[in-house]
Image 1 (spheres, rainbow, N blue to C red):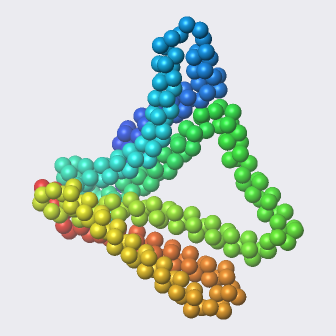
Image 2: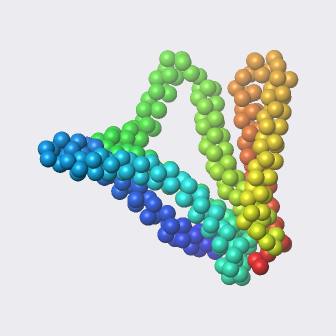
Image 3: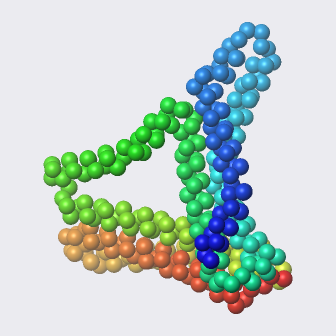
Length: 288
């Protein structure tokens, strides 16, 4: 059933985001071709254009501004649609239908969170390709470079191992660091999504001004999370300082401990937001 919910949410999300993706890529192609073929400069240089030269210059400026706006809109609209899908799908009239389905509350929220995460990831990919499409040559070189990165990385690592620049232990630590940061980035992204959900779930408990209270709850949660973050950071730094000689003698272990502490913080953050969202929606739901 979770897969069906994800599929439903994905279709609804793409109906809103696909036009933005297409517009970003189309504008990139237009501006890229105009730049590669030097169309605007050639037309402006033609004799007897007069007022049309000014129009062409303005058109070029408008296209560039529109391109910048739509690249930014990729991420802004993705966030707005994600919030809107949760609010309308679970906290408004559509919620009456969704909560009658034979699924658990956590499945409803998780399906929306997964789709929101995927939409954000695709927005990043589309933005990268939109930037690359500004020049067809650069795009091909960019795609080629992406496929060459694994081979180049493996070659550089092998060469460093042969030269003794890094040791197998260093390579193991770097691999662990990469895995830790990737997992931390994913968990942080889901925590950010569920933070919106938790704030909206708490805000819907009020009888009036639910949107306003959702915003206030989001600000309050963000302040509390920031305080906890800096407290954890301070304690982590203090722990490393107390370790003293051990941290100096084993710097990689000390760094792993700090990264591990940050990872635990992200996991606790995510778990807290999931718990608040699901408990409130299950026990304190107010669709009036």
